[in-house]
Length: 389
Image 1 (tube, rainbow, N blue to C red):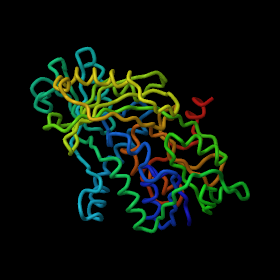
Image 2: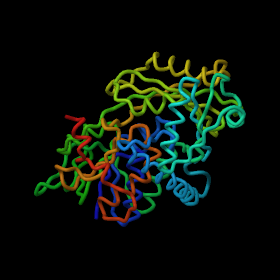
Image 3: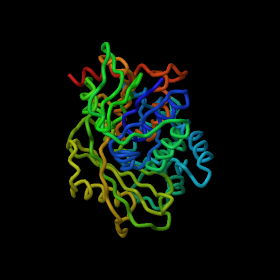
Image 4: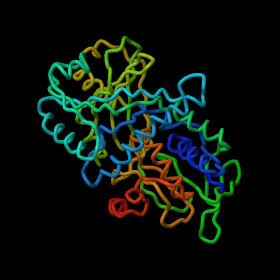
C-alpha cells in the first residue's frame, strides 16, 4: 500500500515511521523540508502536567499519558539506530507547576483531578519546593511536581523520526501539494509542484496550514494558526532544574480567546541556554516581530525567577501552532473525502503527542492494532462541527 504523508513536521515524520514499520510504501512530501516550520520553533514539550481531567479534554490527557510512555522507548530505539550520539536529546527531568498565593487552591484542585486519571502529581510547598527549584521567587507559595514531564530537542527529534522512516523505505519529496487526484469519489494521490504522486491513501499533517491544505484536497477542516513566541538566553550555569511554569499556562492553552495571552514557562537546555515562554494569539500567519508578547513574557519570567533580570537574551523566535476550536487533535479519515486522513490540531502539544498520533494513523490507514481509543479525535466528531458552525 502506498501512502502519501503531507507535512514533514513531527506529526508527519512520526506517522511516516509508523506506517513504514507496518509495511506501507511511504512518500513524505513537504514544501520546505523536515522540521522546517512549527516543529523547529517550539520547546519540545512532552507533557502530562497541562492535561486536565474534565470530560471534554480527558481524551487528550489519556493520549498524552500513552504518548509520554512511548517517547521513552522510542528515544532509546532512535539513539541505538543513530549510534553516534543522542537522536532526540530526551530529558526526563520532570516538571514543576507553581502558583502564587491567589492561585494555590485552583492548582491543587486541578492536580487532584489529574491524579484521578493516573497522572502522577505531587503537591509540594516550603522546603520541598525550594529543594526542587532553589532559585524560585520567595513569592511562590506552592507547586505541583510532575515526575513524568519531559523534553526533547524538537528539530533533532523530528529529523531522527524521518530518518528512521527512510531507513525503512520511506522517501522524501520536496514539493508543495496543490490538488487531489480523485477517482470514483476517492482520493488516489496528490498533484504537487514536482508532479503527480499516486497513492492508496493520503495523510495530511500540515500543522497550522492543514485547513488550507485540506481545502486544496477537497475537504473542510477548521484548523487555525495560533502564534507563540519564545525567548532564548545566553548560556549560563544551570539554575532551572525542571520544566517550570505558572498555573496560568493551563488556562492559556485551553482558552478560545484570540487576543494575546501570556504565561510563564522556563527551562534549561543541555546547551546551557534557558528557554522562556510562552504566548498565544490568533493573528493569522503574521510573523512580524512583536514587542508586546516579548515584554509580557519577560516580565512574568522575572517574577518567577528573579535572577533572569540580569540575564542577556540571545534571540527570540515565533512559530504557529495548529489550533482546533474544540481543543482536541483531529486524527482519522475525512468524513467527506474517502482515503484522506487527518493528523493535526495538536496546538502546542504536537511534539508530546506525536508517537500516539502516529499509532492511531497506522490504525486508521492500515488497520494496525492499537489500545488507544480513536473515537474522540475523529474529524467528523460533533464537538468540532458545533464549534466550527
